[in-house]
Length: 115
Image 1 (cartoon, rainbow, N blue to C red):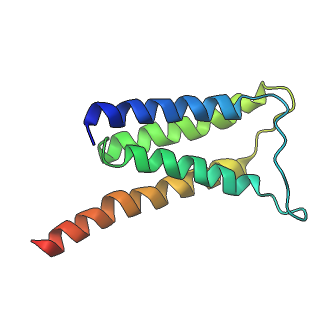
Image 2 (tube, rainbow, N blue to C red):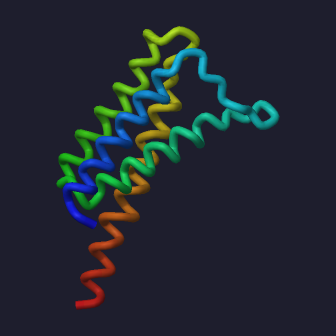
């Protein structure tokens, strides 16, 4: 995929993250009192990480990932009906780490073993 297309998709996905996390009074369905919103956070940031993994350097990936995770959660402090939750930040960071490992570290190991 073209680098410019990847960059555009990453930017679009980050915009989607801020729109979703900034939507007032957004109710997330619950399954028998299980906080499924953590799964949603994981999925959203896993997708972002998969878009960024081959586009950014490792340090860029960490910086952009952490900034987006933190800003998306801190933004909820000023949005009516939304709550700041540390576990949402944890879910986002775990998702970024998982996508980095799958799409960056593992890909390098596969390429080295093919050589």
